[in-house]
Length: 127
Image (cartoon, rainbow, N blue to C red):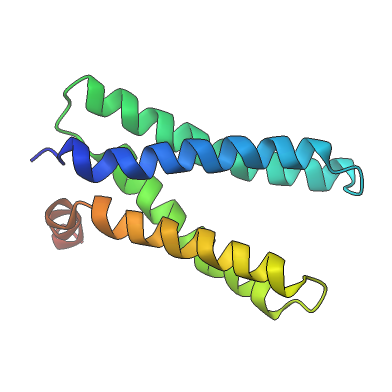
């Protein structure tokens, strides 16, 4: 079963816009070490790669939703962990925390819309 365009497209567009701008912010931050830049860019590239592979797979009319599921799972793991760490870290301002909480809520909401629950249940049933 294929997920309709209206379910997966908003998540992929959001992901592409969000993480492309994140890479720009990372590269402009002169306070980060080379290792910190590398780690942050790798995380952003992972999101971008999963979003692009989701688009590619869907445009090729493939029934396989593996890339969409991977993007959803990656988002579901990353955002609660990173968002939680931002919220408990006293080094961040309330405005920074509010912005990242909003980004997390929007992303998780789009994941809830895009996640192919029937396919996920089939995969879970195999284990």
